[in-house]
Length: 380
Image: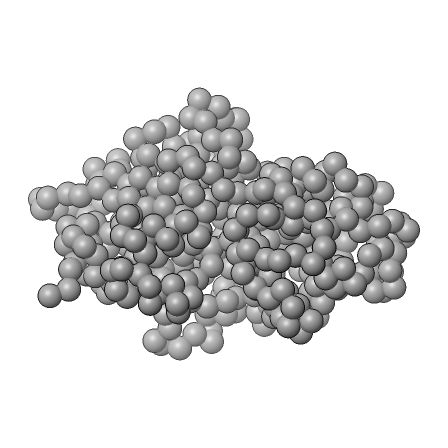
C-alpha cells in the first residue's frame, strides 16, 4: 500500500488526512477538497459525541508506525479521541514492514500492518508476545486500461494468476473470452503492472492468488515483496495507477479506497460460490463476516479472509491490524492503549465507511473488546 514517511499528529488538522486515501504520499494539512472536508465532517460527527473514559490518573501519549493504508483512519480516530481524552497519538505512515520492525525493536508503542506477523517475526520481537487486533478492512481492486469496454471486466482468481505468471498474454485469449461472452475483447497484449516495494496490498493480492491457484502457490507465493515473473513495476498505488492509465492494455491491482477516489474501473471477481462480486465496502465487510463464523474461541486473529464462502463476499479482502505487546513497557501506556481501543471499536468504527474503509462486522466487536484486557503493563 502507498508508502509515505509523513507523521500524523492528532493536534494537526486531521481532515486533511483523508487525502491520503487517494494519494498518501501527497498529504498536506493545507490542501483538501470539498469532498474530503465533507467526509471529515461526517467522521467528526460520528466519533466525537461519545464520552471518553474518565480518570484522574496520570496520562501518557502513544506512538505508532506502520501501514500507510490505515494511516488516514488512525489519524482521524486519534484526532477525535484527543478531544475527549487529552491523549495524543502520533502515527507514522512508513509501511507495514517498517511498522513491524519498529514495534519489534520497541521504538513505538504499537504497530500497524496489513499482513499478520509470521511466527519468526513474533519470536524475534524484543518485548515478548504480540497481540493482533484487526481494526478495519480493505479490499484490493483489479483495474485495467480497456477504454472500449463499457461494462466491468469479469475475472477469476486462476485466470488472474495466469496473467501474472505470463501464461495469458492477450486480452482476447480463450480463457478471458469465455468469462466475458457479452463483450468483444481486443487482440491486444496484456501489460502486467505491480508494486515494486514491500506492500500490504501486494500481500493481500498474492495471498488470494496463492489460495486459488496451485501454480501461483508453488511459484511466487505470498509476501509483501514478490519476485514477479513478468510485468512493469511502480512504487505505491499511485505508481501502479500511473502505469495503468498511461499504458493501453495494462492491468494492475490497487486498494479499493484508492480505486474509488481515482475513479478507476474495477473487475468483477468470481467468489467461492461461483458468483460475480464487485469490490465495495459492503462486500469487503461480508468477507470478514463469512470468515468469522469459522474462528475458534482461542484465535489470535492472524488469519486470512481471502476467497471466503459467504454470499456477496468479495474474494480479495483483508483486515488491517494494530500490533500491540501483551506486556507493554509502561503501565500507564497500557491503560491508555486499552481505553483507546475500546473507544475505537465502539465509536471509531462508525466513521469507517465515510473514510472509505470497510468496518468490522458487528459480530466480531464483542469478541475483540473482551480481548482488550489482555493488554497489560510490564511482566513481573
